[in-house]
Length: 460
Image (cartoon, rainbow, N blue to C red; front, side, top):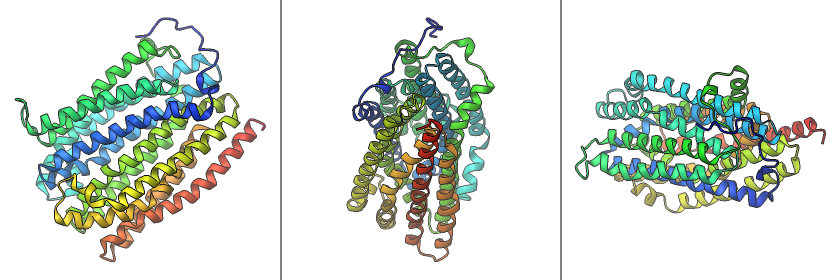
């Protein structure tokens, strides 16, 4: 690993402190947005190919989402903490702290892998039985899929960690390259392993899982190499990849709310699947297809968000609130614009979008109305995503946690359950709009408080 110049100093000034904000945000965010779009593509491609097997196969992959999302929660949340601490340390010219953040973060990523590998091996079947009950085909498909995805999850956790190390120092183009390699690998392997092309065995749903973990592992290996060869701002030292209580606490002080927020999303999805199964399993398939499709809208915003966070953290650490303000305003405007475009597409072409999933007439009938109703909340969600991350990046991570808890647990699930008692499925979808209105209101209040606190801290 990269042991040279371990005592060296960071550059005098990182580009995050000197480039014009618009140019900087574009340079940081566009590569991440592209890579996120590609990730959204291969998530959808997974389901498109699996849907050709049967609706049960599509349901199995859809029902696995809470478990996969839980991995993303821990991997991504830990990475958010690493990102914020490392970028802030570089802004403060504290090279030692930046290096400790990187090395401790790697150790934490490996710990996350061990935990989820055990969950995948021993509890996947129980998880699917809780959701699908007596639907044997769904349980069998889902168990095989989740066991592979979680049991071989070292790729996704290392990918999260090492890509965020690149992003934290402004090397988002390199991070994009690693993600593109992983995504393309997945897309290429999907049909080969699912349907048994070119002499490979026909693995069906398990093939989609193998393709996924193969792409993640390859991307992780490339990200490690990129950090060792192309990232001189941090120094990865094998003997320093270990537990450090002080650094771990600081990483999770920022990252824990993100973990909880994503975990809450898993609970929400699990709960919604149970509610929708009460109508028909086709409604659950529609919900799964929606989540795949909406990723084309949300993932670019998450990429924009990922490009924004290190800029804000760095400039807050450097006491440059003028640059923080400009970055937030530009990011919010861009996020809302992206989400509005997504809203228009979902309103105009819902049947076309569902057609990619080999949708039955019943699925088209339910899904056409579902996509139009749910997508109304997109612009509000764009504002909420950015506002929550701003709070995390400059020292008020629990604000975003409160927003997420209120949206998905306090509002969305109870409202969806209450509306389900009417026996009208269309009303259940409106719960998303109600929840996002509450979330956007809280986001505006907390964002204002965060800026007031930040200015007071810096005596501005």
